Image (cartoon, rainbow, N blue to C red; front, top):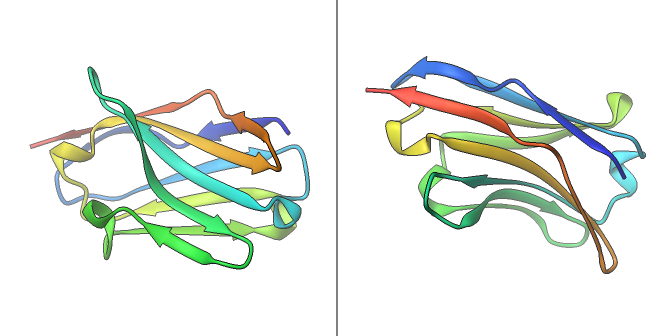
Length: 114
């Protein structure tokens, strides 16, 4: 599965961004799709995921502000990010898992200024 992320940018605190991740496979057939992020000097952390049989999960830090969704017609994973904070600044990666196979997009930079 090839993943192509887009939509990052520089915004001010309180503003919104919408990240998209185009998949080369039918996204609704992929058992796990997710967004991760990695801030400078920190580990890569899970932001939100959609898992077959489990539904949607969010990191506590983004609950109520971020929404993950799939556009099955476009084979695209979307992360709508509202009320952004400076601590949301990171490189955001889309991720897919099929069995023991893991796939990553190239990352898109999100920078939130205070």
